[in-house]
Length: 136
Image 1: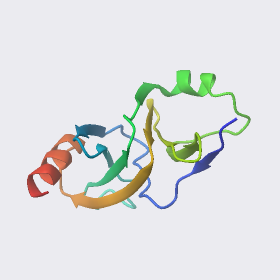
Image 2 (image 1 turned 60 degrees about the vertical axis):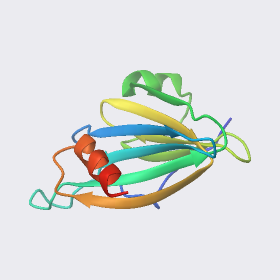
Image 3 (image 1 turned 90 degrees about the vertical axis):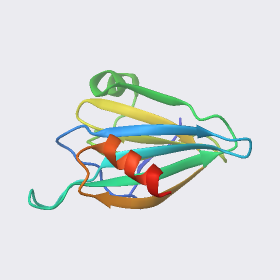
Image 4 (image 1 turned 60 degrees about the horizontal axis):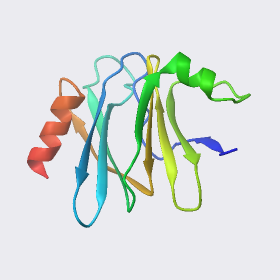
């Protein structure tokens, strides 16, 4: 059975509201998926912020999303999972990033991951993605 661990080297996703989007880019050299999600704020007066994470690798990534309750029923595990980011080891080269929110579970396969940037003062994850793409 693949091992599941909490990912602590990326910003924690916002727990109360689901606000995420992803963008898949294919080039002859590499497949890249950009995942943009709202970051948990310490207090409500803090500006909205969004993490832009790059997931890449040689293979075509698989992206799956479903309702959290359905996902947790299918995931035959003893541990109680809460909202957050998790990693699942598939094999020596490929992992799954699992973003678990109150409403949905998003899985993306990847071989490398890195936090590209954190964006502030965007109204939602789509605007954050567009802002990143314009400045990249």
